Length: 139
Image 1 (tube, rainbow, N blue to C red):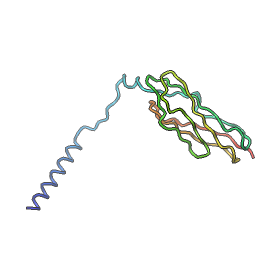
Image 2: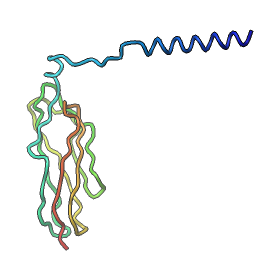
Image 3: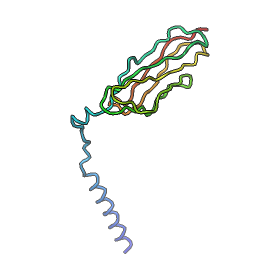
Image 4: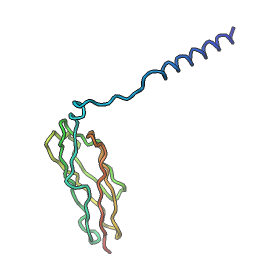
C-alpha cells in the first residue's frame, strides 16, 4: 500500500512539473507606448581626464546629466570601482526635462595613474552607464 502511494505521489509531482513547464514562457515585448514612456538619461560627458594632478591636489569633477525621457528618473545606485573614488548624487527623482549632476571625488594622496570607473544604475531605458575618470597624480 505504501508503495502505491509513493508511485502515485511521484506521478502527481511529475505531472504538475510538466504542466508548469509546458506553459508559454515567452517574454512579452513592450509596445510602442511603453517604450516611449520611459526615463532616459543623457550625460554631457562620460569621461573626465584630470591630466596631471599634483599630489593632494583637487580630485573633484562633476558629470552632468538630464532626464530626456517621459517619466521621473531615479538613480538607484552609483558606485565606484574602488574606495579611492567617492561619488555623491541626489536620491530624489529627476522630473522629465530637469538636469542634475554626480560629483566624483578622487583621492589624490597616492602618486600614479588614475583609471577608475563609476557605474550609474537607474530606471532609464539604458539602465547602466559607466563613467570614467583618468589622469595621473604627480609625486
